[in-house]
Length: 237
Image (cartoon, rainbow, N blue to C red):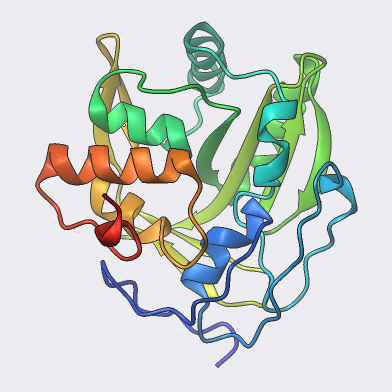
C-alpha cells in the first residue's frame, strides 16, 4: 500500500536485486516489496540518474564515483558538525561516518557524510551549506538532498519527520515510509555524536551487492556489538 509504514526487522528477506547506484542500495533494502528493475552501472553519471518508483535514492549518490570525490576527513567532519550545532539542528549520522561513531574511531576513508535531520530544517541547512561553498548536485526531496563543495566533498541530507519514539520517518520516492529508529550516542576523538544504531546499520547494509567497505563496516560492527552478520555478509570469509 502506497504510503504505508513497513516493518523493519533486523534481518528481513529481500528479492536479491543488485543495484550499482549506491543511492538505490538502501532503498532496495527498505522497499523490497516494490517491483523494480536493477539499474546498470552508470560510472561518472550521477547527476544524470533520475529516481523513479521502485528506485528510491536514500543516500543519493553512485558508489562508482566514490573515488572521484575528495574524502571527508576528520577535521572536515568536526567543522561540519560545528556548523550543524551552531544552527541548532537536531541531527544524527548515518553511513560510514555513523559506523565509525559507533566504533569510536575512524576506521577507513569516507567519500561523503550522511546526515539525518528533520525535514523542517532542510531549507535552512541547505542555505547554511551553500554559504560555505557547497552546491546542490542532487535534489531528490523529500527523500534526499546532496551537496558538494569545490573540493569534491559531499554531504548527503536525509530528511525525516521526527516521531514520538525519538526516531524519524523518511518519505521514499514511491511514497513508502522508512522508519529510522532513535539514534544512539557514539563518539570520535572524545566528541559525543548521535548516530544510527548498530542494529539499524546492519539492516541498511542489506539488499544490494556489497562493496569491500561494506564488508569491513558490517564485520566490525558485528564483532564490536556481538551481533550476527546478515546475509550476504555471513558467508564472507
